[in-house]
Image (cartoon, rainbow over all chains, first blue to last red; front, side, top):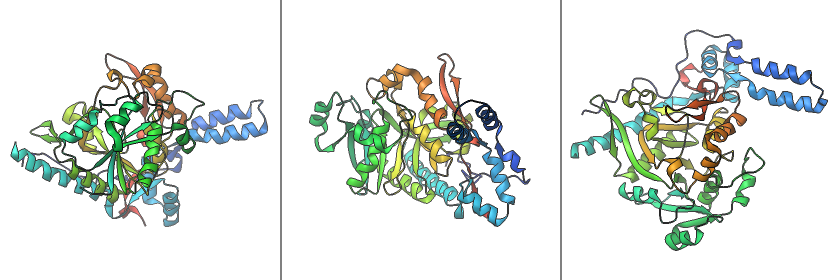
Length: 118
Length: 281
């Protein structure tokens, strides 16, 4: 068979690194802080400020690889809360990874037959 | 061919010129399919005459309350209405699964590495591909699964897609499960808005590299959404995603000779990682 598939890893899983990051590495709040300061120094109404500050949280920048690294070292309770918040997606029984391997194998089987015909 | 599945081909202003139908025929697809148009289509009579009982017509005003356009008005020549209508139609027709297709596909093909090159082979057994992809949808619990597009493979075997094999996005073709619905949002760039917007809260959107489709070139292809793109270019289009997901999306120049603005997603800041359950305590 000449098709060169080479699936070494559990696609599309991320492999956490062997170092627990700081929580401050998991989120960047620079833009949020800039916006918040500007809002607080503005002359808009109190209600408008509340709204704008809530909207500024859209600029929280999460680092999902660091978050996954953190998850791997977190307590069971923290892990559960992180899962509830969809900060990581747990691939139970490697269903996603194995699902792709299965798909790939079935397509490879079709191709083997087809290429053999050509 | 399974009976719980159909392909919805969303069309606009292309009656009698639906390339996707010819392409499905060449791929030996034997299952159900329906043409979806809106009641403001200028060729509505021609569609009725041509496609008869294969045609479903919807009203955009009735769909608009189901999703956020992100704006206060603009052209309704947008596919987002049809995309959201498909979930309602699938339920009405009693389908378990459906596939959303555009009307301008000219090729459905396998992409695979062989002898140091990226090869292409036309699909001739599309019924099997439907079964395989639906199984993948079920196995992964994804909200939707999509085929790759030929443009995803620029650079051939050097393209990262051949290594990652699966992307956390879905564009153009959408395999969906009727009882696991989701909402497409934004008047334009609805696919990107949706996979980023729902992806960041844990929705799984997947594109796999093994099957790929080819469209006619968007801005040379009469009908469809071409008028909308020509009117505003991709500049405005891209900003719809920045509007909804400003923490991980920017608009940046793209291209070689013909420079245009396009959205750029920082994926590490966009969607949570998928990790093995071996890390769960």
